[in-house]
Structure formats: structure tokens, C-alpha cells
Figure 1 (cartoon, rainbow, N blue to C red):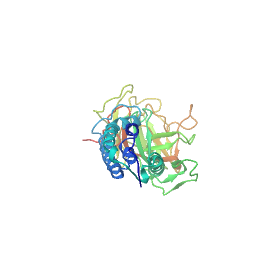
Figure 2 (tube, rainbow, N blue to C red):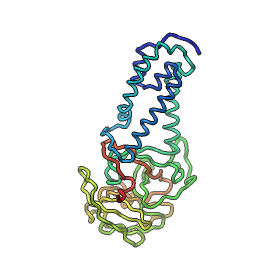
Figure 3 (cartoon, one colour):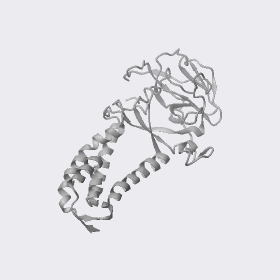
Figure 4 (cartoon, helix red, strand yellow):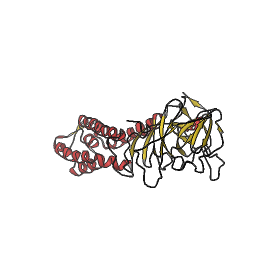
Length: 329
């Protein structure tokens, strides 16, 4: 440690407003206060995260989640400036963590390594929903987390430069009804999200909008009380799988172009996917060779994982119980 002159007021203003209290306290050599601010901010953002993700409140309508975080964190930045100015005259000790290269480079490097490499690559990957194909279960603007380890790992679970191997390791079995993010089979690059309806060996057919699974119709029950979103015709039904699992679909025209199909037989190690918005979804009803390109059967190795949480909506749409399929209350 060394003793030095007080940090300049200008540096405290700039660092506080741009980077917030943790970096200001490190800059001033106040490691314990930096840790306290870190814990307080984790609790603060954790509470907001839980409130929004659990549906108790609608998130503000902002197109960029980073903008939301910046706005919500602004009070801490203002507090950091005034707290830093108050401590400035007495913060004359310069521990190793107050060096400029440590203050600015180490936190950024650790955040990148932990949040964007380890967590994103190995455990939970964030995606956002750009279309209405999964309405009402997923809305445009939804930000979701996908469990990378639920089905095990394939070469599509990691960046190509890090892993390229056949099949899956630590494989887990997908279940009917899961909302799954997968790589589009015809290019192995585009991310799609649909509901898994057919397992290997299943026979799937649609007749007048009703799904027949192995020759048995999946029950449809009309459901009320779900608000239609602007620009999307709606006619909601609860669809129930043989194991009792249910969710809400939208089928505004039961005799649409893809509501009456031939029978599909799902090949080994492949899955059959449907969008919840049955009249506006490019899914397994359309083969890879369909005009304009379709989805077809999805290979096991193309599955990235099931959606486990809707944690934000950039358009301010209330989350409620959409991932759980609007359970009866």
C-alpha cells in the first residue's frame, strides 16, 4: 500500500456516473464499501428480477434490457458520486485494487468470464422472441432463459470454435409439451423456439386444427380471459397431452392452410415441433424442402434446451403465467 494525494473530484464524478458505486469505491481504495455496494445491488436487482419474472408487475416498455438496467441503476450512480466526494479527503491509502488498470480491467474481465462465457455457455443462455409464432405462451419482446444442461450438450450447445463433436453428452430426455429452443435443421445456425409435440416414433396429424397423437385427438377446451394482442387474431384453447400436461394455444381459423395435414411419423432421434400460434407458425408441419424453406423434423443434437424462465419483456407486456401455460386459478 502507498499513501497518495486525494483523487480528483472530476474523476469521482465521471467514474461514479458512468460505472457506479463499486468502481468508485475501488478507485478510492475502499474495498469493504465496494463489497457492500455489490451485495446491495445484487439484492436490489434480484428483487426486481423476481418481481417481473413472477408476473407481479409488468416491466417498463424499453427495447433494450441494458437500457432498463442502466435506468434502474442510476440512483446508485448518483449516490456513488456524493458518497465518493465525501470520502475523498480521507481516502489516501492506495491498495493494489485501487490501481487504474485493476479498477477498470479486472471487473470487466471477471464479469465477461463469469456471466457471458461460463453461465451463458454451460448453464443458462438468454434469447429473445422476435415473432408471434408462440403466442400466447411467448410474446414478441420476451427475453427468456434456456437451460443448456437439461437435455445434455451437443455441438450446438457451444460456439463452434470451442466444441465440434457428434451426438450429445450427459444426454437428458425431452418431454412432450416442453418449449424448446433449437437450431433450424436446414441451416444449423438459426435459432427457433417451438413446443415439442412429437417424440421419436410418434404419429402426428392435424385435422381441422386438432392434433391427433398416435391416432388419439388431443382435447381442446375453449378458454377465456386472455387478452388478444394487437395485430393477432385470437381464439384460445387449452390443449391437453396424454400425461395431463396442458398449455394454451391460439387457433383463430381451424381450417387454415396447415390445419389439415397428412400423417407424420417422427424418425428415430428426431422431434416434431409446433408453434402455439397455429395459424402463424413455421414449424414441423412444413418440411425442409417446402417453398421458402421449412423446419421439418428436428434432430436430437439440434436441441439447445427448454425455456425455463421469461425474465423480461421489452415491450412492457405483463409476464404472468405464460411459460406455465396460464394455469387455472
